[in-house]
Length: 449
Image 1 (cartoon, rainbow, N blue to C red):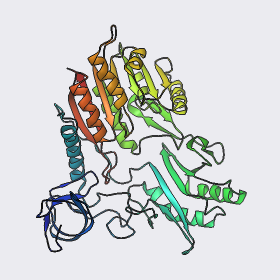
Image 2 (cartoon, one colour):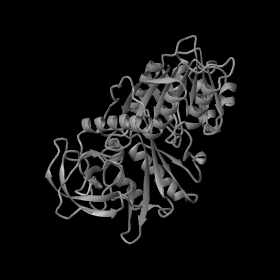
Image 3 (tube, helix red, strand yellow):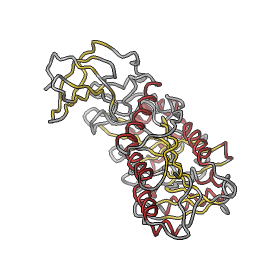
Image 4 (cartoon, rainbow, N blue to C red):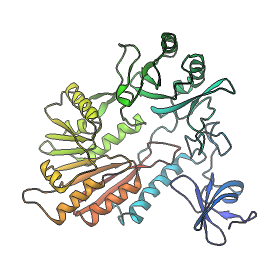
């Protein structure tokens, strides 16, 4: 048990951006707000046999990497916004820690070491968030509306007046949005507003549990006219999203290096950080090195974020995704960009794949894999099974570029690729898609051994 007057030396940060220390008994203590190298007095909250959870009470030795947070709503105090966890840590140190998290996961979980570490992909650290889901709450006791992210470890919405990771024009809209919702008939029936920004278009999606009155629709139109936004309504699931009023500019983003324009709906999955996505796609395509004579499969293709750039380089590409709706929009994007003859798309459940399924898709020279947080275990397992029991006439891809949003599942899949499927991990590196958060994105390259 950690004593009240026991000074703890912080050794590292965990995946949740908590300082990790050990008390005199050798028990691990996780400390919110503490940084590596610091000495801290703590208040212990939760206690388990192997670890304790604590909050920071006093520092005797501060880390040289500790900085003043850029947002007044960041902190450990009651009511602090839970959207960011690392604003107290210098930006360069954040990236270094994420790179170390990637390396540690590959080493400890996958028993894999990349032959070469890629330079981390970095970009703007403020105003970068082009997608966000903002919770909305009418607080009857205070006769006010809250719009923002949740408080730390709480279901309550933080009392946010600004947000430094949102673009400035969106941050400036938070208080006007509160006033808008407070003036509406449906103020108790709007649980969230989703943000999606494209090139020159800022879309706001009101999750309306009941049809809006004509007066409320006019209030949205008046707000849009003043703040230059586009309102969408979502009465039920994501597929029900529709414009409040037809017309106006189309929501889309561009990939200038490849001359591509990618229209999307505000509820479609697109990367939160458009600046990083542009660099990410460029690096992935260079590492994939698709040749004009090659056929590529893009697993978990989404809207074609990687598929269509691949189509500008390869002979042909097959994009596979689990959603029929996404596949339909991928086909539209391929046609819009003049690539329908080179890019095919198919919908199927990618969490249920067998060796027979891989063989049925035919031989591909290279793969790009970009799964959700669950990873691509079924895909990788089927590939490993084909290494153990080869099929005549089918050979595995010579190179796989794996883009990951979860280093733990990447490490798990890397272990199968390297130790069973016959690949080497030739490169790996972190991607700072979400500055000031503990979220780690990464990229790894595998080649046939």
